[in-house]
Amino acid sequence: MFKHDPSDHQENLQNGYPPLKLVNRKTETERTVVKVAGAELGGPDIVIIAGPCSIESKEQLWAIGKSVKNSGARILRGGIYKPRTSPYSFQGLQDEGLQLLSWIRKELNLPVVTEVMDPRKLELVCQHADMIQIGSRNMHNTPLLTEVGQIRKPVLLKRGMAATIDEFLFAAEYIVKMGNEQVVLCERGIRTFETSTRFTLDISAIPLLKRLCHLPVIVDPSHGSGHWWMVPWLSKAALAAGADGLIIEVHHDPTRALCDGGQSLLPDKFQVLMEELKKLAEVMGRKISV
Ligand code: PEP
Ligand code: MN
Image 1 (tube, helix red, strand yellow):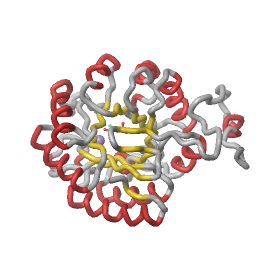
Image 2: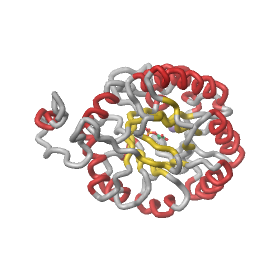
Image 3: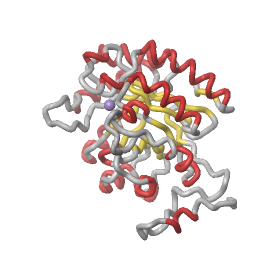
């Protein structure tokens, strides 16, 4: 048993929730490894996920996909159903993007992760993607969590932007309770009083989640800051704090991106970052998954 038992945390809950049963770590060594095609999250190696915020066209997807793969990304990200604040903003290619997902994963031999918001789309998207992302705005959507709990694909669960650690863990519990144990947690920044950054990346969430829970923990420094130039700093901070991976937005022409250009790294900057991460991983006694 732990010296300071992480399950004590449950007794400290102010809100009177029943304790976690499945995602809480019960022994010091308990760790879940989530496999996405050949990439293993939660094992000794650090997995980098990268790609555009939104898939915009075949040409855009090819340019970005090829470059992030060459730089060492193991999983390609790309949204087709976009949760936008304004209904007048680009909503993603929607169903038209599905074929592009299938095409790029085959063409590059790279697994893809994409967000699903509507449970009615889940079955369809599962035919085209290797990992299903539940976005920050849907972390509290229990019918959606219950549905992804019934698929047999890995799930990338992002922290709600106003969710406590307990709420985040209970959201993961909803998925695992339904039988899908392949869940990766993603810290992506929370709302604070600070307005200079898009969100405040909660670095302390990383060791905390890894202490309380056996699921892999990755970090999204792009949404976490909203500034492309901050992404390398926060990526390194996340690795130093024990993250099992990163999900990073990359765009070859960010000023013309249809979504989140200001927080997207140019491909050459992403490549430089990958080189820095390799060195840092070594210091951490880990390596970047290749
Ligand atoms: C995304 O990763 O595409 C996204 C919309 O992120 P979040 O749900 O964290 O805002
Ligand atoms: Mn984005």
